[in-house]
Amino acid sequence: MIYSTVTDVEVGTPNKKKVEAEPTLPIYLKFTDLTYKAIVKGVTTIEEKTILHRITGVVKPGEMLALMGPSGSGKTTLLSILGGRLSLPIVGGAVTYNDQPFSKLDKATKGRTSYGCHPSAGAGEYLERLDHLMKLYKIKKFTKHRCQDTMVGGSMVRGVSGGERKRVCIGSEILFNHALLFLDEPSSGLDSTTSLKIIQMLHDLAKAGKTIITAIDQPSGRLFYKFDKLILLGKGNLLHSGKTSEVMGYFGSIGFSPLIAMNRAEFLVDVANGNINDTTLPSALESKMQIQGNPNPGSKHGKSSSVIIHEYLVEAYESTVEAKERKKLMAPISKDKKSKLCSVKRERGASWWQQYSILFQRAFKEQRHEYLSWLKISQVLAIAIILEFLWWQSGCKTEKELEDQAGLLFFIAFFWGFFPLSTATFTFPQEKAMLIKE
Ligand SMILES: Nc1ncnc2c1ncn2[C@@H]1O[C@H](COP(=O)(O)OP(=O)(O)OP(=O)(O)O)[C@@H](O)[C@H]1O
Image 1 (cartoon, rainbow, N blue to C red):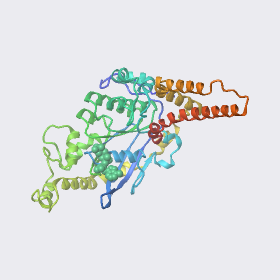
Image 2: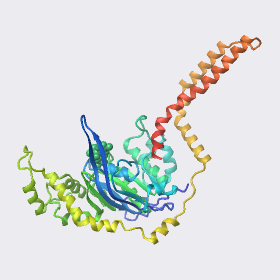
Image 3: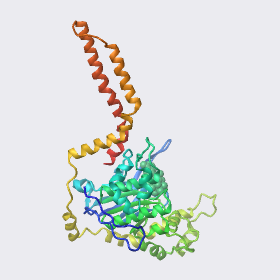
């Protein structure tokens, strides 16, 4: 395996060099009119709920796309669909990778997408191999020393902290050199410095030719411009899709601008939520609110202001940008770029034997505390001593004695067959998540 080599020593320094990665297969991810409906079962009713409505966008190699929006706007659902984790019941829409649907991709491309982390691997196992990467990304200091001997952990095993787990996950994905990365809230729950380092690291990876998509609730002002593209969602609808540098200009052009200095991400999420305090409003929206609005809070007549704002934003995007953007976004990959995609050669993956020995060593490392525990050793010794006493001085001369010996052999075969099997059974629930991911 060829590791990515990183030469970015200090995050945020103007002099930083770019990440030089192993040639990765570039992936153009396009999604058109994605609509996702879920069946919601109530106590007496079953109804269809539209979670995503006609979402269109494109991410190219070298770009990092942020899916932003208020809580419940559909970011995770969109990320899951793009990552191939949710297939049904999608109604309409298409996702293509290098202009091909997932089912038609060759094995190499399918293997270059990544989403998640192994819960039972030792954090140090990843970090050991990632050492030179981590050192250069400045992750070593706050990750390796403190958690290198800890399991990553999961729902059943308590492992490293949430933040450490995130960093190890991202580290492991770098290690596997995936061309397409999906990350759900990579910086949530982390302090602002760590968040910045992680997003900067992802930004550098994108610049090395990878395609990165992250769902993010509300990045800080410093993080905001690290994303090349932005999709703003509101109640499952597209409120904006395009370059991050252009999003404020777009909202200004339709009449929404912050009245006070505020974090741009905060402004966008506020507007998507229908919170218009400290924001200028277009006069067309103001008159709509007067005509269609709820005359008094208790009344059932009229729409709430957040619904009117939401409808206005969806309409504004559809009428001003969507058609133009769609044309631009959906243009097929040029022949020149396609030939470059085909020319990227990758090394063959590990052989069957290499895979077996890696997995064997990993399983032994993970389980050794259990297998070699004093409890297990005492159990085995106690059973051996009991057997010794039960069959003490039993011969094999008469038929009766031979039957006794057969009983002993049966017991040994049965016990030593099922004893390790019962222990091994407990590893399957832990491995299941990884199996599904792969
Ligand atoms: N299978 C489902 N059945 C019913 N409702 C669903 C289903 N999947 C998602 N939803 C609903 O769709 C909406 C969007 O969910 P999603 O998790 O994608 O939002 P999100 O933007 O990622 O939210 P958050 O930022 O809080 O994680 C939510 O209201 C959620 O309850």
